[in-house]
Amino acid sequence: MFKQAILLINLGTPDHCDPASVKHYLSQFLNDKRVIDLPAWLRYPLVNAFIVPLRYRKVAKAYQKIWLDIGSPLLVYSEQLKQTLAEKLGDNYQVELGMRYGQPSIETALASYHWDEIDSLTVLPLFPQYSSAATGSALEVVFKFFAKQWNLPSLTVQHDFYAHPAYITAYADMIKKHTQGRNIDLLLFSYHGLPERHINKSHCHAGCDHLSPCPPITANNLYCYRGQCYASSQLIAKELAYSSDQYAVSFQSRLGRTPWIKPYTDLLLPDLIKQGRKNIAIVSPSFVMDCLETLEEINIRLRQQWLSLGGKEFIFIPCLNNSPLLLDMLIDLIPKN
Image (cartoon, rainbow, N blue to C red; front, side, top):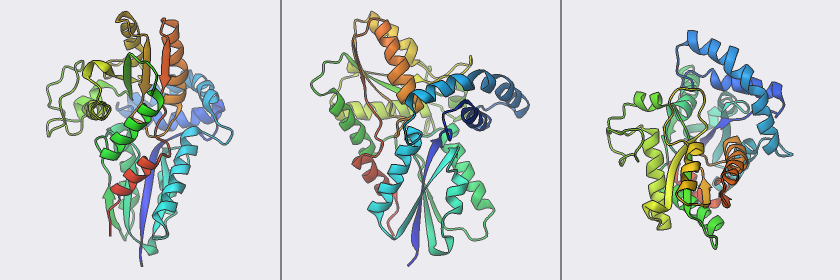
């Protein structure tokens, strides 16, 4: 009997939290043409002469604040998910984990399969909302690997799962768990940001103004990352029975001076204080694993900003990590032979 291969893909992490390791990781990450989508003659000097040299020490300090005794949180949680999924699926499956940047790489994961025993591969990028910078970049590596192979297995690629019922329920349950019995004025959905030009390049024809909430996903905005983020938020809020004035959507982690999708999380906080909202809960559904962007950017820096503005309650809601509902969702995404 042939086995089914399952490839989990996550974004990546430095091997260690020292400056040299972080510099190497940032160089690999930011030189990706899908991440900084500028011509190579402009991207290469911008990244390697300015962005990385000016940022890597600061980023290393940020990683040091959240690094676990056994390694990077993103890698630790991803490995735990891989192991738990493999145990739940059983011997008829071979589950591997590949990182787009860093180790274990996607190429290493693909090379580790026993291809003579496998007739199908399901690729599961752990990015709920589609973006060319994350999902597209990871899948490009997968396709390049198979472009060099003589024998090709049956291939299933998961595009996104921003509206999958188990993903929505899992995040709604996580929010309930951490807010139950606590008074909050607003639930803030903070998603990883992208440059606005990425949305324009995704052939979005929904007629958005880049400031108002996005309309529902249709053929006009099928690949719109911002639209999918709003769709996820609306579905989770509906699951929680929240009205539109009980939650807000924003975007974090912008880099450089080019316009990024709005509203910006850090610039939204002063407005919330002016509205008289002092108690907030914040969740980041663009990630399924806690990482630098959730543990340091949100739970440390954004918390400090909120308190310095006069905010009172700041409830950090962790990612799904290795929750049973996330496992059930991934299993549901795997084709059944």
